[in-house]
Length: 236
Image (cartoon, rainbow, N blue to C red; front, side, top):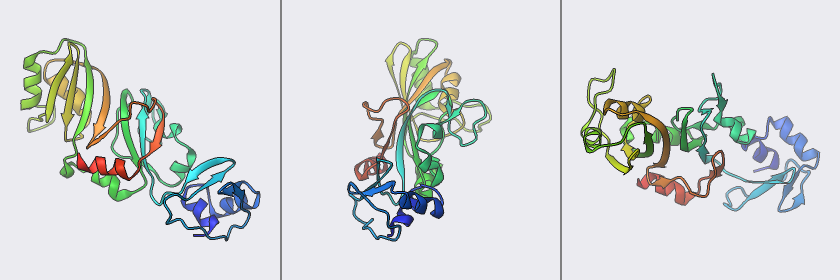
């Protein structure tokens, strides 16, 4: 693939803007400046990367990202009351059409997937896929066995015709529980906890499928997902 096309597919602007970056000697390959926009490079090599203004970028045909979402951010390009999660990412990702894989409420923290692969987004948002999601919830009132039993057996949410049950519900402390759900209904976990007779004060997503949020990833930070990560997602 020629260098202009590489930059274009990776979200560095229009073809004219990408060619200008190259002509202005702002793009390097393997540490060497390249000013030939038509020069071809082996993008099928998984190790291929390039630099723009000294910042190294790996070439990825599709973007698969994991963000440790902090509180106070909306999963929208057009947020209404808070900042957008996309403000935490380099602008190249928005340019190439990366979108959130499902949504987390603005006050919910933790693991958020993003991608520009439509099939991937559908796979992990479709209720038919039954992808388990694990949340850690902090509650206002002490958790008791009756609440845990209600969550496991199913609670009726307002506006729903059938009870919704957690795959697993386990106390981690007097005011903390881990809840595993398959669906992604609106405010589902908070509504389930309320229906069980308590109130959710804080919510953090720890895992999607078999992929856990890395302990080393700081709130607001993001990372690429590699093939091992994608395999873990599908194995969950």
